[in-house]
Image (tube, rainbow, N blue to C red):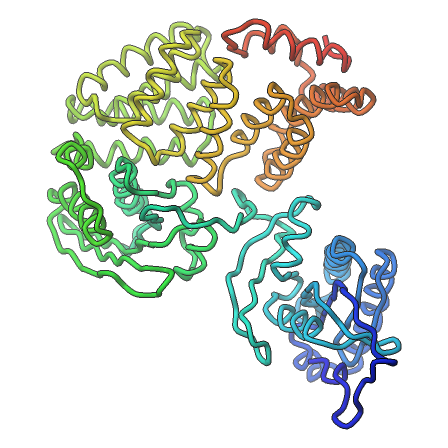
Length: 602
């Protein structure tokens, strides 16, 4: 790899000849070049010449220069890491288009690595560890992919509309220190987000990965997922713990991942992983707890039980984790872990189906109706089981909140009545109080909503959705700083958070006068929404940009944002917004509408 870049022994670089500088270094080579040459040498050379010319042109476009290009390698330098990464992204886009015209076995994919480092310049060439690290990072990249060092990531993370995946630290040849590497997500997967490089919490922190379904029956996925979810729920009730939310832990479902990578991406020390095999009336569960910092397995066990014992087994695994992490519980906390469940395995399975279908299918009239039907079936099997009541109440709440019913007021009343039944069955169930908080908000009973939200947090201090809901409620109650704190907590517990978390932050920053930060977060909302393929939800981006641009005195851009809002949502009006906003203080909504009027909306 670029062996010609280093001066030969006996040919020292003198001070007069040497010139040191800091450069962004781009290193690229062809994946599978030897195979391509072996299959058709002439065609490979022709393709390489065409691709190399395209790469050199783009490097020049972004103010870089090609330093060396031996064989299938290309080495370039830039004065700016932003220019280097912009060039790399454009290179991969253009080469992907060119490859589309070739048979799959003749496509030529380049791997690209970028580093920021000190180099020695000698004539037209550059040397040094900065170059070598770029070459090693390139080798870690996939064909058609881009990897960057941490010092590049630190420079570009807030400057470019890209997403990144932290690949951990790597020991590479001829480099003394381990290097931290990030992958550029040029086509981000749904739910992906930037790895923040979290610091570990000052309490035992854990991610419970989705248990693997070993039954060979895809229909049993909700059962194996339910095992993981119940353990997360139990652990989340303990204030002495820090527990990553279900949605973020489940982004690793079906993927072969290392505990250390999960630890770095989610910012936790401990990882629980396992498997479930259900056959007839028997279930076998294996579980192991890993300290990702040291790599040690704290415990690993296999359980063979009847299905009737599944609830006790989930609690047993939860308590085993707490014991291993030396978390001492009060009697009240122990009772909270066990909670109020059901003795009916059929009712439990129905509840898991209702919740899983609702989660996977998103917000649609059909999904809500089917979830409601299954939750009602679970209740018929066990009328003292609180969880399906909560699920049933949420279906009515969604009907009212998202216009899936002709009578939102009646739907909220139904949700409230069902939630009260669940509360009577288990007052220590945090989801019940979160549900009631959400109902009270949209009934404009802000003080009751705050009280119920605080109760939910006390019972489920690690519940990301509860913190996010409290952020939402606090915003409408005019408690903007509290709303920011709750939303930030939710984002830490849920690193793969949904875009609407960012909406809450943007709106709160707008009201406290942090308009530049609001604009940056709105742009992040746009990027995350697009990466999830949810373009129908881009209209709030334009609204958020319009009101903050007005406050920044950028009226022309505010009007452009308002026009973009109407293109995506022609039915939008201030009256429509008034109907769906629930601010306790009318002046808060009026301030927002005043700015929207200045941007040209009516």
